[in-house]
Length: 464
Image (cartoon, rainbow, N blue to C red; front, side):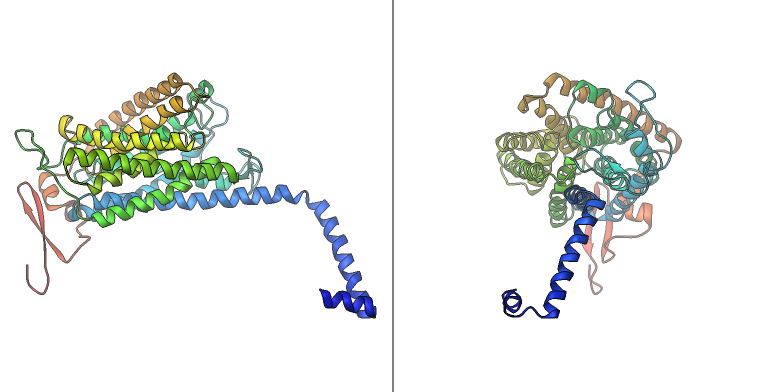
């Protein structure tokens, strides 16, 4: 630039004059185009919002790999193929059912039956063309982005159920339950808050789904686990617990980190805009709660079991994440730490309660993580955020509990009556990989069925 200015001052040649005129003309055209296209600041906000929402979408998507990994790691090797099959199928079921009916059940616009139920029609179609805007936040984002972000949430509720019924539920029965549960139960219940329904009008608050996603899935998980009964060999005749350890703690640990990573999209995307201040706050509260959940679970489990338990701190992290999800955008850092710490303590106490006293066999602790800590996180909004009522939060928790329990109970009982919900004892002992799929996730292992469960031996070079 200095050379250019120097040449102009020294000797304004025809080439220099032509260049200056060209730059002037380009500047004039740019100003004119800017006026014709509208304010560029609004365009930039719209683009930033849309890009962030899509980034959040694939962060939530990767959570399904986290669920698959942690569920697989905390269960036995002989059921790995079955668990992975369920988790792959769930995401397909969630997206397709959400496109067919779910989106228009959760966000129906005008409610047809008071503020309890509404339906905007089958399928998805932008009301304003391919880029119909969603004005949930300044600048908005496209209709298609809104759909795909919300669709990623839909399958999560069924994934929660998958962990609690693992290792003994029929695959076909589970897939039928998941389809109906995700398509209708999750969406109708979700419309009460996120669709502008009666709980939203009352002032109930659930930022990213401690209740709408996690507790709804948790209630379904509880009913399923109770109706199925415990795995063979889980309890002795006298009622004593026989631990059934998972086959891969490294896989489970990787699953936890994938879930934590994806939670930044789960909570951060629920801001529904690229607001830098609010997203940053949500990231901080989410991280603090997860970290505090680990510490809470570590301390209590170490005291109770006399040894540091890795599986407990994995669930402690998830407990903190579930706990903060309802109020991640309205909590202070100190409140987030308290919420996460209590969630970590609760998940350990809850696992012990369901395992030892209620005799509800939950192989991965899904009920304790998602139901118990989901309830806690929702109520915590009414405790730590002054602008929200504790009683309103409690009413919301109870409403979702009654509705989901009733729906899940009816679904499971009808499926049980028609086709059964539990595999045969022989299939369970053999493992669902062979019993349901005729294939093994680890073909180099030879499974040896025993009366109380199964053991694994390595087959290598002809040696067992």
